[in-house]
Amino acid sequence: MSAVCGVVLSTGRILTQSSVELMAARGVFVRPIKRLLPRVSFTQTRSWCSDGPVADRAEVRLSRPDGEDDGIVEVMMCRERARNSLGRVFVGQMRELVSSLHHDTAVRVVVFKSLIPGVFCAGADLKERAQMSNPEAELFVQGLRSLMNDIAALPMPTIAAVDGFALGGGLELALACDLRTAAHSAQMGLIETTRGLLPGAGGSQRLPRTVGFAIAKELIFTGRRVGGEQAAELGLVNRSVPQNQTGDAAHKEALCLAREILPQAPIAVRMAKIAMNRGAEVDISSGMAIEGMCYARLIPTRDRQEGMAAFIEKRPPRYIGE
Image (cartoon, rainbow, N blue to C red; front, side, top):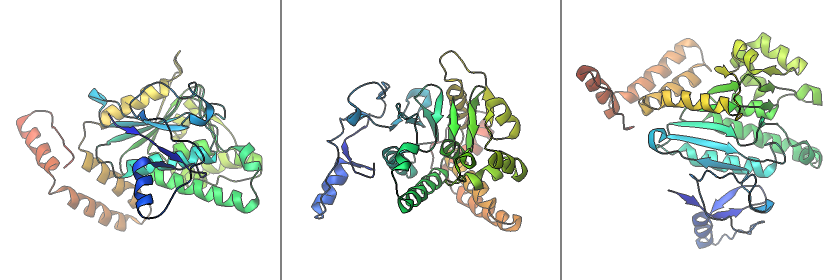
């Protein structure tokens, strides 16, 4: 069971205690804007949305299930009063957690979910944005775009569980994930043109690549919202399911999908993601070369040998990620 303790900077970034000590040893001292965060296990299940003073709440946190779900990590969004809108602190904490996952070879699937009923992510924090100067707003959106790129660049499969509204930047966050599940009752849309803007955190690029250019242009030009069932028909989400009484049907479906990925060879899954993502950006001849390089990386792995042995011995493979 792991735990974290650190300071929150004015940017919203969390520095762990060990990072603070290392920086101090180098002569760099950090002045936090908030007191040290309480020591909290990533595996605790009690939500910070309703407990403790406002200053002590995490807006984004991790959960690492154990047992049969070992290898699945959940990124849980919990900015209750602002409906998970993308404010400075929220974005800073999300960036820190995503960075911590990037080199974690024990993680096989990441699920992004909301702890706020009826909301995945409401998009931009317009109240906070209204207080920014034009240069500040432009710089902040550049940071948002960078965050979505960081999510898209995670080496393991990522799944967005959309159980409620995913609007503007909220849908851009979901689009940065590899896969998406949605409740029928969910509402999704890139609504920026209704606010005098365009999708600025990757939506204008990822939506056409997901649903095709004609559909993407229609959705962005009109600012239209679509429900979960229509989103599945358009290819915007992989699976859509009826909402349940507890309001977490998409999350349950995302876990089902994650559990289908979990038994597969983790290095092979990561290489497949690289081959598809990078291959989609180049011509097919170059894509074939990328596929060949990724395939070559798998030849010497113990997992490939295990897969062959399990097939010959007619037993389930036991992959270890080596």
